Amino acid sequence: MTTFSDLGLSQKVLSAVTDAGYTIPTPIQAGAIPPALQRRDILGIAQTGTGKTASFVLPMLTLLEKGRARARMPRTLILEPTRELAAQVAENFEKYGKNHKLNIALLIGGVSFDEQDRKLERGADVLIATPGRLLDHCERGKLLMSGVEILVIDEADRMLDMGFIPDIERIAKLIPFTRQTLFFSATMPPEIQKLADRFLQNPERLEVSVRSSTATTVTQRFVATHGKDYEKRQTLRDLIKAQEELKNAIIFCNRKKDVADLFRSLDRHGFSVGALHGDMDQRSRMAMLANFKDGNIKLLVASDVAARGLDIPDVSHVFNFDVPIHAEDYVHRIGRTGRAGRSGAAFTLVTKRDTKFSDAIEKLIDKKVEWLDGDLDSLPPAAESEERERPRKGRGRERDKDRDRDRERDRDRPAASHKTDTRRDDTQGNAKGPDMGNEAVKADRQSENRQNQPVRNQRPANDDVRDRRNNNNRRYRRDDDDGPTPVGFGDDIPAFMLIAGKA
Image 1 (cartoon, rainbow, N blue to C red):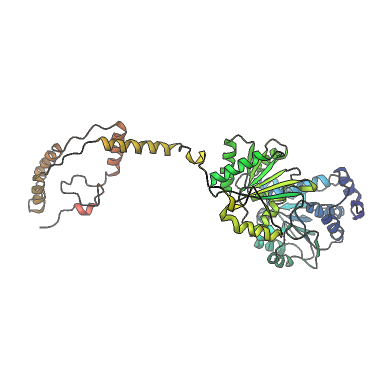
Image 2: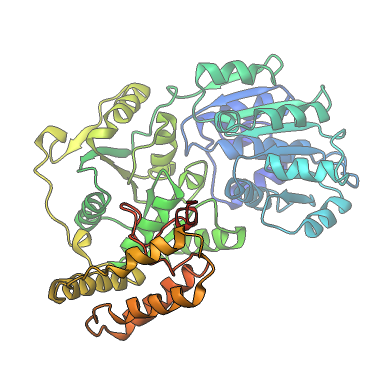
């Protein structure tokens, strides 16, 4: 049986690995470490949770024992798609590199540029970065990439598929052509494979498991549910309560808005829950992950920012509140449980609109996923939910009350008897005649008309306020017309229709 001591690692690295409690490498580690130490390019494909991170961290530590970094010129570069993955790789370097005196710089968003600049000034043996922040430092003239010896692109399919292709191409042009390049990923679709070939020179290809496969230690089930959000939330709550061995769980949603809505719903129903998505600042995201790892919260509602590579060793359950649109994301999501040989359970809520996505998942993993308590055809009719009948809050509820009060008042108000005033025709006649300047006569007749108007019922104070608002809104309109109101305009009469015509 192969051990870490058989792979050619230095004594300092072996000592740190032993202190961490590991003696037997995983298949991807046993296959990747020897050629990496020979400075060959590597394309490693293995299911999530099999130790891909250590496959490049351990040989890099051994190779970095010779030489030292210079200011603003890192020796190695590791690109990660998310801040959390970058921070996690930095933790691995600190754990396995405790016997080395290496400078490790982490360039991610949400952290001060000044603090990162100070680390670069000291010289970085290992530079771990997200593409956007790395290019920001290069454009500011704070970073030179001509000294990079090893380039690692972690989660390669995600990096290329998420739109990072132009950024990676720019970064690759800044790095010497003689670099060593390592690609690691859980999935590698054919179209992404073509792009990866552009960055690798005669690579050692390692595929230690069936492509896009899921761990056999994870029990997978589809759960049929109705499509309304409140019905899905009810199904999820019942499903969580039914799990007898649930220690902690990650609940995945497709959108950040759904993460916030589901978090509020679970919190309102008394669950110990936190939320994690891309719009949170870096400090909040790291604090939330720390609370989940430490067991301070039991459920973590997250977007796909938590689906890739996060190493939380003992997650017992994964719930997909939304079926992932991309089937590859399903492999990464359920890979958060059943890690390092442990058992886990993954449940995916499926509605009738999600069947094409669930079919794509089964096609990708080449496996039929069993249904829990019947499929969609056996789903009972939708039941009314208390969430649906919950009264509206805030200003919406006040508007409903005002509207109901207005309707009640209109029903009780007696119909006004409108009298025809023959003098109104005379006013119009005078307005059309040559004696248009007789303003005094016109003012007297307007006063008489207003006095002859029927008196309306007394209305509440709220209506008085509403009338004053309406009068303010109409301050720029003529409201002294005594003629008939044009049909179809109500109170909003265009000013040009009030201009007297020529005789």
